[in-house]
Image 1 (tube, rainbow, N blue to C red):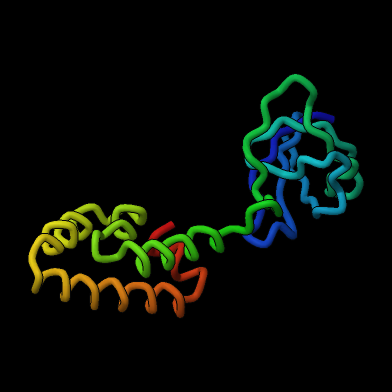
Image 2: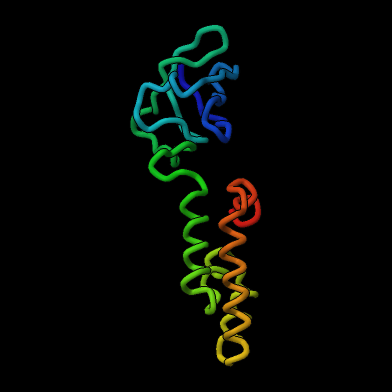
Length: 146
């Protein structure tokens, strides 16, 4: 049967597929038979058993969106670490603020850096930001800056 992936939970443990028959089916990662894995909106071919999708493949010739649970780049880890490194090494210029989409405060930090007093202020500000990002929970970081 053919269908479309409706969603995958955050942990990638379970998801839903809308079948062409109008029914919805659930699946787990072990139900995937190709190496691409689940991605929301992907067109798939699958077999069913008691409301569950089994032996799931992406339909050949369709462009699949990026997988929802891509192990090559753990969700959140790279972005958070990059923000910490930007804040620690280039923080006085506000680079970490631009990186996180906080353009207004990034401009303020950049302008303050032009003065000696402002350089001291932005240095302390950037250090506090780096520590704050580092100790912040990954989920909270992505909720704020994702």
